[in-house]
Image 1 (cartoon, rainbow, N blue to C red):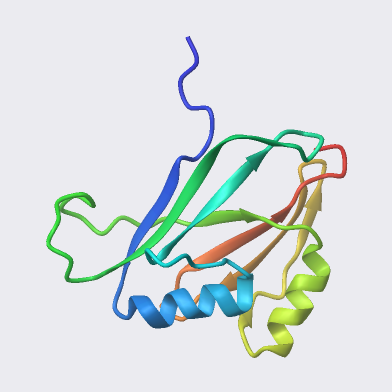
Image 2: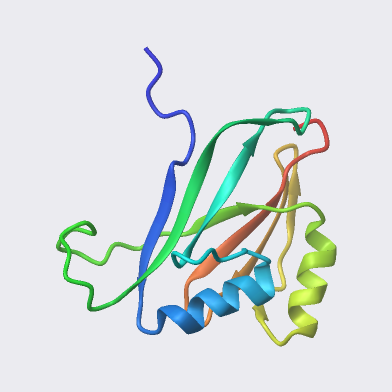
Length: 130
């Protein structure tokens, strides 16, 4: 029996959801839909579309819901990117807080940026075979 097969959605709270959505759209290219989130379409290894999406949504801190549980857990989101060195350079030029370190291994290239609310965001360029 398969258990986890991917990420179905990313949901987090924000002090200023509109500003945070705008930052992610401007600097990381996440196209925010009218509902206030984004849907990443799935592709197979050859880049062909397959059925499925991953949801992404920023909610206000004061939203009245139990969906997030009683605690404020720490987390880091890993976003797949196409050309990590070019993206990190662009983010630096845009004034974003980019960590200087970039790691490269058999798993690909990894870099990090800090979003406006202090969250560490991991950017991952998979190896070319992935």
